[in-house]
Amino acid sequence: MLPLGTDLERPTIYIDPEKCMGCRSCEIACAIEHSMSKTLFGAIFETPTPKPRLKVVVADFFNVPLRCQHCEDAPCIRVCPTGAIKKSEEGFVILNPNKCIGCLMCVMACPFGHPKYEAEYKVVLKCDSCIERVRKGREPACVEACPTKALKFGPLEEILDEIRRERAGELISGLKVPGIVYMKPVVEEKKEEEKVSPKDVYASYSKVKWY
Image 1 (cartoon, rainbow, N blue to C red):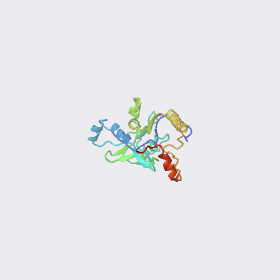
Image 2 (cartoon, rainbow, N blue to C red; image 1 turned 180 degrees about the vertical axis):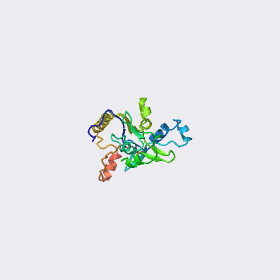
Image 3 (cartoon, rainbow, N blue to C red; image 1 turned 90 degrees about the horizontal axis):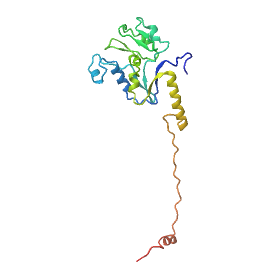
Image 4 (spheres, rainbow, N blue to C red; image 1 turned 120 degrees about the vertical axis):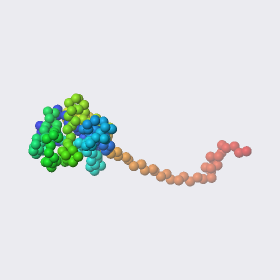
């Protein structure tokens, strides 16, 4: 259920755990995007080491790429004493590392446990939805890198329409529960052994010519 007043035109990232295979391509892409070189081989040798702003965790039987939810009424913004966390025009919750003092107030306030303090950076790191990429008309790095399309990006209304079409297709195809296939057990019927009489043997060889 979506809360009342939800902006359906707001760009967001939808996570489908049923499609996530835990490859962590999103984590690698995120770390590279937030590196200085913007390349895999360059990022390896950078100091401090580039860190991803999301994390794939295992919950029951699902892999879930956890990231900032960019809350409408973000508690991290309210508790930040230096005003390092602001909301962008697109609705993304952005952290300015130049203003962060590493007090961890946002870490404690976040209900999703997303912002993470990195001692190597001496500040808190959090997802910014790759705002610079989005402003250039590109998808966030994690969405672009996902090989199974477990991550979708776009206006919330468009994503919901796409999900409805997928669920309708599953309903039509008979797949009531995605990811589960029901198979009817096959039981072989045992046939009674037929008794063979000497006459039957003679009849079966009646057409054979003996020399």
